[in-house]
Length: 92
Image (cartoon, rainbow, N blue to C red):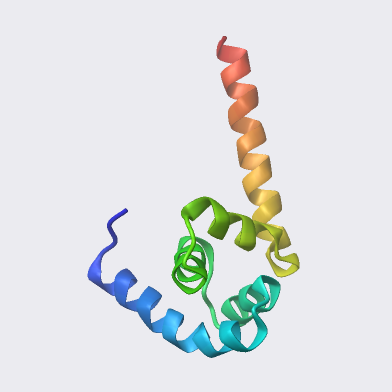
């Protein structure tokens, strides 16, 4: 996935800012709380997580959506998917 230069720079900078938190705790919940507290949300938080955990997109999304501090994002995501599934079922 390609990002513009500004987003790429924000992700790289936040990875370096969050690296000590991840290295000290090894706790994905603590990492997500740190990212949230420092204004890193959504796609950028997922890509920061991918970089720090050296994992694939699916694992980074699980870390993001399963963190207690990301409850609002998880509920929004689930509601959006439910609406899409209902719409697809109505069209079938």
